[in-house]
Length: 544
Image (tube, rainbow, N blue to C red; front, side, top):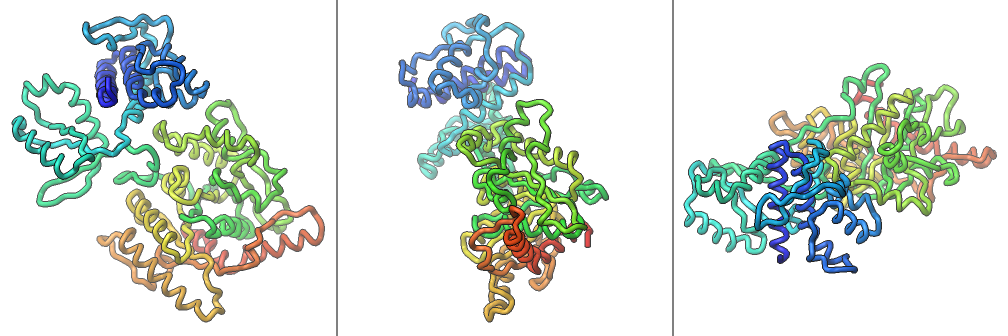
C-alpha cells in the first residue's frame, strides 16, 4: 500500500473500532484500534526501522508491541502513547478470527478481557495518532436534501481550485440518500465527531460557519467557548480558612516576574499571612535559587508530577521547603516554597517524562490540581503563589487559565511583550467571567523622580487600554474609562532597580554581613512598588 492508502486504512480501522465500541464489543474494538495504530505508524516505522521490511505488517497486537519496543529501544512510555494496543498489553494467547474473507486484516479477539474504558482509551489515542498533521481542510455540509453527484463534483472542483493543496478532498454530508448511506456507512461516525468538537466560527448572510480542529498541543491557550473553572471555587477561597491561588505570568522572560512573586510573598507574610510559593517553571527553574543554596534543593514540582501517578501515599512535605527565619519578622506568618526540582544530571530525563501535550485529556490540569489540593490540605496557607512558565507553554497555559483565582501579568513596553499580553488577555476573556481578577504590571519602568516617568506611564496606560478594549472588555457590559484605577488596563508599575541586576540571595549562612545583605534585598522587595501590587491583589478577595 502507498502512504495515502495506509492513512485511509488507519481511518477506516478507527471508524470500525468506534462502531464496535458502540456495539459494546470491547475486545474487538481494542483490536481494531490496534490495527489503526499499526497503519498510522507506517511512516514512523519506515524512518526508524533498521532491521527489516516495515511494509510486512502483522496483525497481532502482541507481536506489534515487540516490534515497536525493539525499534524504540524499550521506551515504553512513548510506546504507550503511540500504540494503544501495546499499552494495554494485548494477550499473546488471544486467537484472531477472520470475519470477512478478502480482508485478512480484520481479525478480532474474543477473550472478553477488555472493558469499555480500555476501548475508549484506544479510540482516544488513535484519534490523536491519525490526525492530519499537515493541516488539510475537510468539510461537513448540513444539507437538507441528498446532494446530487454532479453538484458534489462541482463543489469539489471549486474547493480544489481555491484551496489547492490545503483541500483534503473530503466533503461529508449530513443528509445522504439510501444509496449513499450504504456506500458511506463509516462517514456517520466522522460526522458525529465533527459535531461534538466543532465551535462556532463566523456567521455571514444567514449562514453559520463552524470550525473543528484536533490540536496536538497548546490546548489550554486556544480552547474557545469553554468555561474555565478555578481549582476550587472563589467562595471556598475567601472563607476564613480558604486558600487563594494566584498565578504570576509573563510572556517574555526577564520581566522580573519571579522577583516580584518573592516580594509579594514577603509582603503577605509580614502582614501575618501564610504563603506557599510554587515554581511551575520546570524548564527554567529560578524561584528556589532566590531563597536557598543549590545544595538545599532536592525535590520539587517535577518530582511530584512524576511520582504522584505511580507512588502510593506520597507526602507533599517531602517536596516543600520552609523559608529560614532570618527573612521573617517575629509576628510574621509562615512562608514555604515548593521548588521546580533539583537541576542535576537526572533533571532532563525527568523532564522528558512529563506529558505536556495532554495526550490524556485533562491530565496536566488534574495533576496540578491534585498538587494544589495536597498543599491546601497539608498546609494552613492563605495564599498559593504560582510562578508560571513564560511564553505559550502548555503547563503555563494550565496554570494561567485553568487553576487560579486571579492572574498577575508582567510585561514591559516592547512589541513582543504586548503581543503576548494581548493573546493571554484574549484567552482569559473567552474562558472566564468578567469578574475574574487580572492585574497588569509594567516592569523596568522609570523611577517616579525621573523626568520621563509621567509620559512613560501615560503611554503604557494608553497602550494597555487599547489592548483591553479590543481583546478583553465586553462592550455589552460597558467599557471603563481610561483613568479608571483598579481596572485591568490601569497597571501597577515596578521601577527599574540596578541593585537587582546581579541576582538576589535571600538566604544567609548566619554571618552578620550576609544577614545585612539579606535585609537589604528584603527592604527592596517589600518597598512601595511591591506593596501596591500586594494590596491590590488582596482586594480581589475582600482583604485590606
